[in-house]
Length: 534
Image 1 (cartoon, one colour):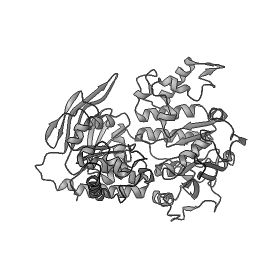
Image 2 (cartoon, helix red, strand yellow; image 1 turned 135 degrees about the vertical axis):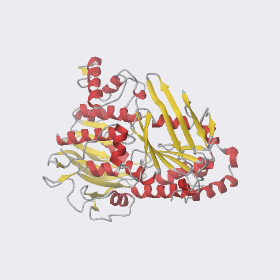
Image 3 (tube, rainbow, N blue to C red; image 1 turned 120 degrees about the vertical axis):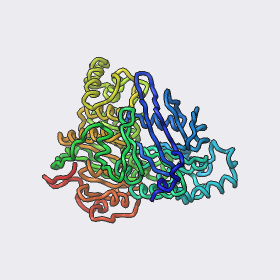
Image 4 (tube, helix red, strand yellow; image 1 turned 60 degrees about the vertical axis):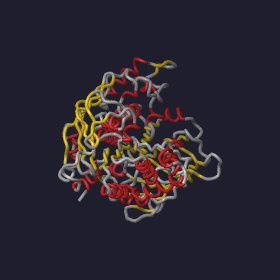
């Protein structure tokens, strides 16, 4: 029994949002939103990107004021001018992108900005150690954050809000970068804290996880609440259809489209740390064939980002070669590699995929400034770029008031659809897709998956890097596990489970016949005609 059921019947809810409306120029982000969160429950908030979840949570956390509506905390109406007001009222937020300083210790990160509470010495240290037991963080407060894994960094973020006195904790996409075993550990922490009286608002796109952890679910669509569901009786598919407002297509089985034609050939690729002391990538060998999706699984920080950036020419390899259709690209720059036929969906769309202050049509040109339809010889073709942006907006369901709005005005999911649309529109030979659906909703996810599947069927070679193990299993023809800069294992998507992959990713080794040590068998091509959920 969750603590939500043990709270006194006459106790006021922990949070009540009534009639919340928030407008921005040309956009109504929230329209008459109602949300009630009981004390001691885990209340999930689901909706497509652009549905208004982030804006609503920013209002609750004091980052933005509502234009209309009221907020009640424990039965008392409040008005937050800033996050400090929300924290004083007992509301804390753990952001999806961790806000920690790697070069500071756990204690320094937790205390930073809250020195007035317990000082910065032994009193603060004792308080942190007391709270650490609630989150399951079993590390010395003097350890540098850069030495922690992803799951422990998340615990430090939770520790920060507890240290400031939060009793209502907003978790924004908390499982996005966790392996299944770490998700289980997080859920144990959440349930334990529930029993101690804490209340959680859980924002996630992973509906199976929502149903596993939540006591109730509120769905937002197009800026307004459309209903509350009981996770014990509603299916993931029903929740998804509530989110998008229509039925979703049923999963299809597809025959393998993998051919013998090698598109990408990476041989002995080695990348060293800036001081040359150790390898970040250690003699990586990798082949991707026409019509094949090769997935890379790994806990973040094990070299996946560096592998992609070295293949793209953004980092200089110490050894090894990168070839596309037999043509070596190792000495070429990034633009030349793109012109050779590589499409690139970057891990960080804001840093490497978009110019946020520029209009959508201008972002269509990025990476394609030397090719049609965005150029005519030496000159940019702005009319061509505008026409093709209109096409991408229509074909990839990019929800926008128009192509002249800046990319920053779009939700994360619509930004991602714009990037994917641009990269597939270049008719690449190879698509490198790094976390292509991270932080996007089920509707955008389904569209991106379908576009990748269709391009694969046309012969596109795809290198897929993802922290979403279900995505890797569902899209890949073969999966390779990366650990400490090496490809250490191969997995068969037809039989492997997320738990199997999680074990290999964390260094536990192959615990299933579906995962074998790299190099012990011929991997990368499924038998002709074999079907799978690809």
